Structure formats: C-alpha cells, structure tokens
Image (cartoon, rainbow, N blue to C red; front, top):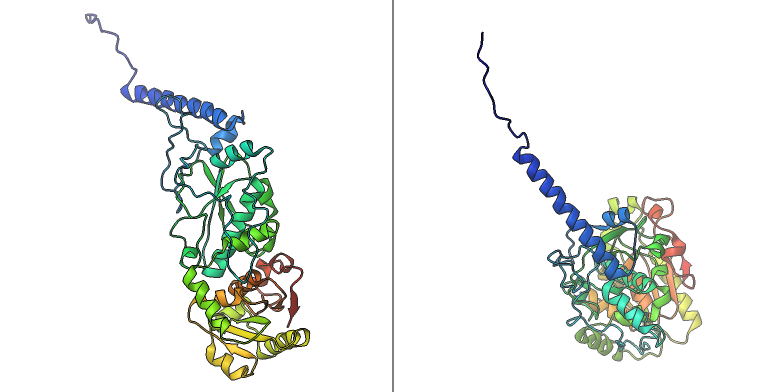
Amino acid sequence: MKASVSRKKTCHFHWQTCVLYTFIFFVFLVVISNVMSYNTLTNKAGVFHDYLWNMTFRESSYIVNKTTNSSKAFGWIKPAVIGRQNTSGILNIASSTTQANKGINPTVGDPHTPTTQHSTKIDDFSRTHYMTVQGNGRLGNQMFQFAALLGVSALHKYTPFVAPNNKLMQVFDIAEARVVNMINYKGHVEERAGAFDRRVHNLSHARNWTLQGYYQSWKYFDHVSNYVRNAFKFKSDIHHKALTKLNTINASVFVGVHVRRGDMNSKRELSRGYNVADESYVIKAINYFRSKYKNPVFVMVGDDGAWMRSKFNFNDVHISTSGSAGGDLALMAHCNHSVVTSGTYGWWGAYLAGGETVYFRDYPKPGSWLDKQYNRADYYPPHWVGMS
C-alpha cells in the first residue's frame, strides 16, 4: 500500500499572465486619459470608437514631434489628440502679404482674418487645428498642392502650413512655411489628380489633416483666389529680374506664351496622353490677341528654345528663356494675358497673370489614360478660351 504524500497547493498564476493584465490596465488608463483630454481640448464628447480610430501616430514629412505641451494633459499621460500648439514662433497669416507683381491687389478677404464677431472662437479653433499638404512633382504641381491647401484650410478655418524646406521656397517667400508639432492627423487622398474632390467639404474637425495628392483644380481655391495669388510672392531677385526684362521692351500689352515640349514629346509620354501643341495652335492663339489688342508683344518662354526661334521669328515675339523655372514663371506672371500649351507650369503662369487666357484644348489627349485622370471643367477655369 502506497503511503500518501501531502502536497502544497501551487499558484498557477504565471508571470506572463501578470504582465498581460498589467499591460491591459495600462492601455485602459491611456485610453481613458486621452478620451478625457479629447473632450476637454475640443469641447466635444465625440464617439468612443471614432476616437480610437483617430489615435494615429504615423510619421509625416512635415511632422517633427508627436508630443504636446498642453496644459490640459492629465497627470503624466500626454494627450494623443489635437494639441494646443506653441504658437510663439508661428507667423501671423492674417497679415496681408502684398505682392508687387504687376499691381496685383493686396489680399482681399483673407480667409484667416476673422471679423470682430466670433473672432475669439475662430482664433481658438485655428490655433488647435492644422492642415498641410504632401505631394510630388515639380514647380507647377507643387503650386497646385499649396493653393489647394490654402483653399481647403480656409473652408474649415484651419491653419495651413508647409515645411520650411518646401520646394516652393526656392522661388517664393511663403508666409505659411513653419514648423508645427502636428499630432492626431489623418491623410486625405484625392480621387483623381485633375478632378475636384468634393469630399474635402466633409473633413472631420476631430483631426488635423494632411492633403495627399496633386489637387489640380481651380475649384479648390477659387473662393480665396486673391489670397492665393498674393501667397505666391516671388523672391525679390526673381521679381526684379522679370521687371527689368519687361522694361526693356516697349509695349503697353504683354502676352505671356508658354511652350512645353521636351519631356512630353517622347513616344512614351505621348502614348499616355501628354499631348504637345503644334505650331498652328500657337499661331492661332497669337492671332487671337493680335486681333483684340493694339500692338501686343508676346513674351515666349519654354523648354525648347531652338524650336521656338525657328517657328516664331516675328517682330512682336520676344523669346526669353532664362533657364530658370522661377524666372520664366515670373515673366509670365507679370504679363497682362496668356497663352498656354501643356502642363501645370504654364497653367500657373496664366493664373498669376490674370487677364485673358487661351489654352490648348487637346491637353490631355482625348480618350487617353491621362484624360481619364482629369475633368476638364475642373482643371480649366470657365472663362479661359480653348483652342486646338
């Protein structure tokens, strides 16, 4: 008969379980603290599951810090929501930035200049709600993205900003360039590059926002057009060189002409829909302005000087290729009217100039891949004149 052996009862509560429970308790504390901070900072109860969806900490090219110095933080847990940013080093975008471009008027109706009524409420909201943009491309593309940022942020009374090393800073003095410690942000990705995305009207105010894409439509910023034109303030050396050049030409009416060929004239790009305007279109557009104005002078810029000189050797055409993207754009912007062929660069030269614009109607090539990315009514302003 086996002797009975008394055994001590053992605890099966393993250390892994203790760690798991501790972790769960910690997460619970963080969530509760952030919900309280969210309610306090935004004065909105919100929806719990929506709040969890908003708790993002992804890195952005414009975000340098994911913490905040908010006095509203509870205890040692920092809020993972819209923080009250330190605005001591932020430029005042409500001030007018008058551009000396051919007499463009100072900013009229700056969307970030609140009226006396409700000004305190708007200021408080703008100080805690930020918007930036993240996209690709060269100067023309970058200008569309920045203009869309100004327009969409104005709709929502957000404070717009771009990084101090943004490519636009090589050509313009951008007042909105600054460092912002933006947290709780979400990216809004456009549906098509050249079509207005109406969803921008419905952005949640429980987040900061990064616009992602090309945003090539005048409809994003038409309501703040004066503000946008003044925001593109050429650097002083670029501005003065353009004025000096135009002052050497005796004319009362200047028409800027942009010719884009180069990179778009390859077999691959042509097959995708990057259509190139031919000589007949440019002649037709020039004759349009010759018939409307007395002795206009055409200032032609572009990426194929040899082709332009061989095709447009007229007394009233001055071919002025500076070799500088900023320099050629400034020449166009200082003209009274415009002729554009293909691409966003010429589009912006015409937009900054104001006046009448004739555009190449066959860009993008109808039925092509690129054409499907665009809505022509969204890309070309309705008062521009299309020719082919």
